[in-house]
Image 1 (tube, rainbow, N blue to C red):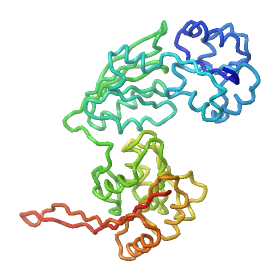
Image 2 (image 1 turned 90 degrees about the horizontal axis):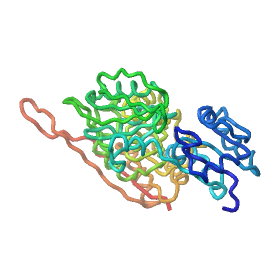
Image 3 (image 1 turned 60 degrees about the vertical axis):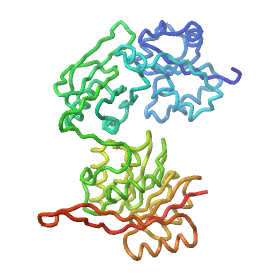
Length: 400
């Protein structure tokens, strides 16, 4: 492994004793050891210089790079490439200079204790992230394994489950897996009261009650799930729009004129690690979007005050752009110019003026034009009839 100077080592609860002999030799020969206080405490007797995680944590890459030329070991828990620091380091340092030494992960150990198939389980993390982001994965019969922030996470998760009709869900905390202090705590979300250690994994076997909120990650959530002022992309049009935008794992969406945030929120729910930035000039609508994002499990929705194209400057490059409000030729051209290759720009219009602009853009730039008409049944006195919504003209074009 010529050129390797950095070793990232996954470690179990038994510390050095959890390592294979060859990996232990690498750790013992290290000139520099970078680790958390917990892992430093579990590795006594090493002679290398010890460095702790930097503060702020974003300085980690520069801290490690400063040691190039020495034998450097970074200690992590479990598998360093599974919701751990290894992937982050690999994005900042040439992977050809790194050797990874995986350990059994907390997910694998938890599944073994519970007898769960990992292939049939959602593997999630709330470590350093809001716990609400597990909500898109909660559903009848779903099984979740969750890396937690600390001892407060199970109570927070139990409260979220109860609020959505999943109080009968079985919860299990598995603490200090593989170590002498290994412990297990079982209970139901509706009466969870266990005091647990900070270092643990949370297993959730979801049980839906009679009033459970059952939501799909496929686009088209009911309109009444969103706090809005009436000016929102309706569910049927939203479903067609998201299909055109093509959510992808880790993809970035610009939601221009985001209003209540419905399109950006559904984009993030539809694909793992998807990101969205809502551009909205009105503060009350940004507030609605933030509330909706938290309630529907995508608390990392980013909201920017302003109008396109001015507000688009310096934003991360998008994989898709939706223009639902504030449509202008300048906004459309700036969005199309910013799009990553193969990304989609989708713009919806309901007024004659905005429709005329889309017709002009289509004539000059190409793409697809679609007219969407939606009718819903509504009471008409003692009877029922079809109530049409305003038709929507949709322009979609792919970046090349």
